[in-house]
Image (tube, protein in one colour):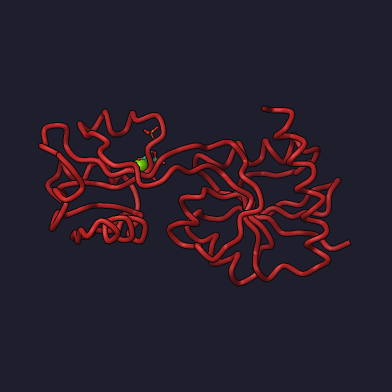
Length: 212
Ligand code: PRP
Ligand code: MG
């Protein structure tokens, strides 16, 4: 039988819940997290542990058949990738934030502002729809520190509990999108593997129904 190859976040906020979902779907995966690949003993499936930001390209190229990934990553890097199922966990927002002390009356206040972010496409699209042009500084992590060190006037990043914003004296001023984990499918998936994926999806749906 054709094994499907599914990408799961290597580390980070989706990792544990993604594996939990597979486990609840009755799929056992014997791994050391040290390994970048694991095989299921009771379902024709291989798991690849990958970096979030790399997953859209792997899907596009058909290196993996499917992925459990945040919608926010697809919006940023993979708008062409098909979402098969919303998975109901890792809910977050992608938002713009400014220092608490800053006066903010609307998105037009960000005209010409320096914005630090790991989501340049998302921010650019959002602002351009509002007729605003900003100066984007792309950084890969710890974005919320940028205003405090004088690197930026505003930031755009994921907000979940809000505690990172709070700790860095920032306030959320625009919610650009709401996101959750999804099952995404490669446009290159073969019909044989598609059948296996549908079996997986059937099980996932049952788990989600039981959870709700
Ligand atoms: C993520 C994200 C935010 C924070 C949001 O960062 O980039 O900073 O979590 O979560 P919260 O609203 O619950 O505080 P992460 O801790 O994953 O680190 P990184 O930015 O360095 O990747
Ligand atoms: Mg962060």
